[in-house]
Length: 164
Image (cartoon, rainbow, N blue to C red; front, side):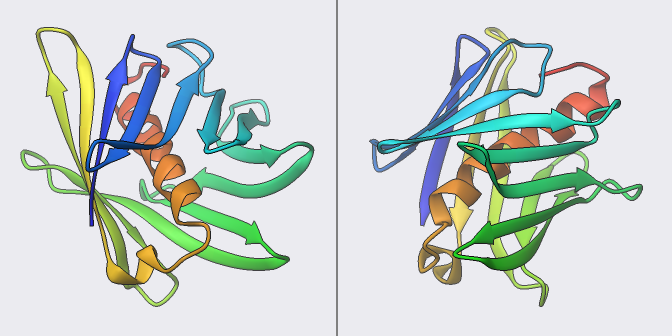
């Protein structure tokens, strides 16, 4: 399946499929990794933890439902806790000139691929997101889509030395 994410006002990203809204990722400010994810009638808080903010948690109220950390090799390791079951994913950067991001499961199966497009005139980010049939069956698919978008922004800001 194909999804589209576009930034509005630098801090708000809307994810759509066939023009229909899936969810939003809203940053509190351009220079912080704190954000809010909104999917249907649910809201989740995205908060960096620790002194350097290298670990990021996604909270449903006070409950941690997802956590990710950037490894020394540039990959982002993601742990998600849904229905008291822990699943692990890896979010990685591919390429240089034709860059993309890939989310894989523990077996190395590709679940989604994101291609960023920077609109240099407006300095806006857009992403094309392609998901596998496997990911489309996941109950937590939409939260994975939006947190993958956050991971891509996190990665790009870490590599350029800017905050999100």
